Every structure is written in C-alpha cells, then in structure tokens.
Amino acid sequence: MGEGAPGHKIYRPGVLFPLAAGAYLGPIETKELAMLNIRRSDERGYADHGWLKSFHTFSFADYYDPKHVEFGALRVINEDRVAAGAGFGTHGHRDMEIISYVLDGELAHKDSMGTGETIRPGDVQRMSAGRGVTHSEFNPSRDKPVHFLQIWIQPDQRGVQPSYEQKHFAADQKRGKLRLIASRDGADGSVSIHQDAKVYAGLFDGAEQADLSVGADRQVYLHVARGSLVANDNVLNAGDALALTDVATLSLSKGQGAEVIVFDLQKVPATRQ
Image 1 (cartoon, one colour):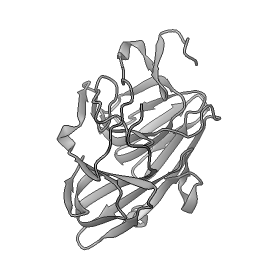
Image 2 (cartoon, rainbow, N blue to C red):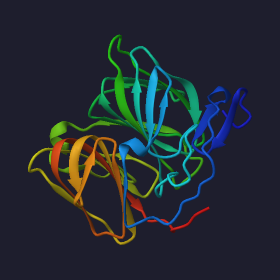
Image 3 (cartoon, rainbow, N blue to C red):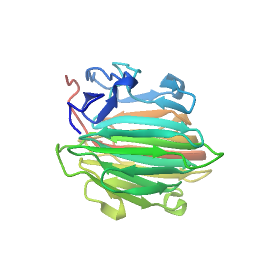
C-alpha cells in the first residue's frame, strides 16, 4: 500500500494512518539534550478512546510536544491498555522497526506477510515494516485487558524487505540483570533490528542491581514499565523515564517490583531539523 492508497494518508515515515484517525505527528525538532533528563509518567501524552487507553512518551497521533518528539533513533514508546475483545484494525506501516512487549494479557497479531501469532508476557515481537506492511492487533480475551508497550525505532535503512520475528525471554533471564532483547545483529539470541541500537529488559527487587556501561558515542533512555527503582541516584516510578547523555554508566538498584526497558542508542547531533 503506498501514499495513494484510498482512504489513507501518510503523515510521517513509519505509519499509514486512516484518515479518520486525524493523526499528525508534526515536524522533528530535536533540541540540545541535558546530561540527565527525567520524564515523569504524568507528563506524558494521554488518549482515552474507551476500548484503548494509551500513554505517549513521545509525540504521537493527536499528541504533539516539540520537546518530546524522539530520542536519537527512538521514536515511540506507547503504553497501551486494550479492552477485552477489542483491538487495532488492519492498518499500514513503512520504514520503521516496531517492537511489542506485553506486560499482562495477550495480544493477537496478523499481517500481510502471512504471520499470525499471539504474544504474551515475556515475548518480544519485532516487525520491520520496510517498504510497506499491513497488520492488525487484537485482544483475544473475553474478560481481561491486555497491557503492553509498543516501541518504534527508526531504521538506518529504508525500503528493506518487511519481516517478522518473535522470541520469548523468561523472567529468570531478566531477574537482577539487563537482558539484551533486540540488537542490530541479533546478539545473544535477541531479535534483530535495522539500526545501531541495543534494547534491554530487566526485573529488579530489593538488593538486585545492575550497571550498563555507556560508550562515549552513545546515549541511553530508560523506561520504567512498572514498579519503582533508583537509576543513577534518581527515584523512578512506573511510567517514568530517564534520558542520559555524556555519562559513562547507567546504574540500577533498590527495585520494588520493577520492570524496565533500556535503550542504548547512537548519539546524534544536538540539533536536527
């Protein structure tokens, strides 16, 4: 499906929105980033569609904040809760690496590549939209909502062959550590993405702690999916995020039922139009 597809309009690389959605993400205006920047949960964008309740860490759909458009190649972190028996109808994407990470419940996926899968807690789903793909996402439960994160990472290659990958990472692989779940080369059994980025997931309670070394040419974004913990001496709660540039280490400790996603990204120029 291309730009001239009936009833649709492409507003930005990555997604083909139905016209009815009225979604406009706005121009990219990345300002110089602080060395340490905390983004609190209640500062995020929020949309309540009844069947869907969604928090937007970065500008998305009708939510636009020029100070929070992207962080390096990281473009979207949406925390979605979809009601039982509801879901996203068939829609299109292109030139975006899309990762889905389920926290509670189940999410059924079907796409134009012939993939039909259901993802559950511990699963990581990666779809490279490339030159164009359509898919749907649906909560198959009759009585339970599904709670998940949808993450978009901008690729460093356009027009690649669309592809799908799904892997399971058990809780013990993430307990008290940062487990690599996505990377350019699929290292350590992670799903592979078309970008110089590494994505980690971790679970932390009590005395459990972990450090991540940050290269001089890298920047890090931490999202707390649930619970709370201390990151580089800052207390973060569910939905909070911490952006770090020009630091050597990300240190995590004092978790209370914490589940985190960490993005190790290539540093980009301070200002990009």
